[in-house]
Length: 160
Image (cartoon, rainbow, N blue to C red; front, side, top):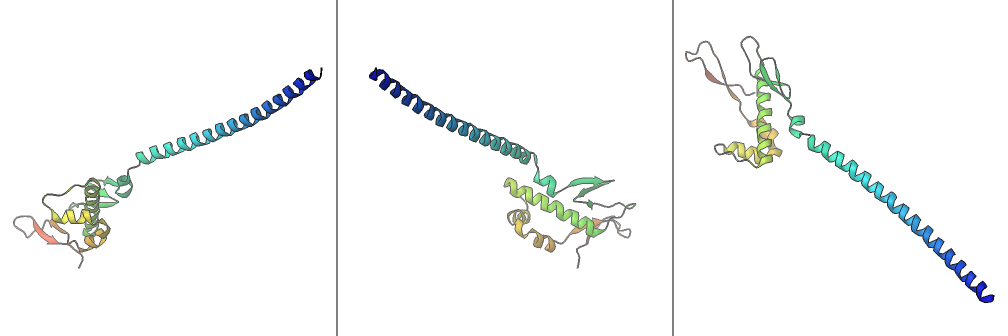
């Protein structure tokens, strides 16, 4: 009988060890599942953020292009003037500067090289200096002057 008692005690010890290992394994598996769910949630959140960023166009945010009646606008500055609707030259110059900045930014983004304008290539390659370049840019636009027999002359409209 003592061998049956010994066998029963040995089996009881083995069963107890089995349940301890099973509990530890179940706890470990549960923790791993929780961690996996957490990582999957982070991946889902990061993927949604990536899709949102992919749909965002920086150029749309930085250069709002629209129209105001008969005039094209860029960042609220009207580009042009009519005899019936005068627009200040400073506003037209600002619009041209914004258009130039957009063109230079797009050229730099796409590594485009202008074939006939070294000046534009210089602007596109030195965008950090664009505010100074634009201040130095002398805007020359065509305006109609009644005393001009041809109807159009170039007039320097740069400030000072």
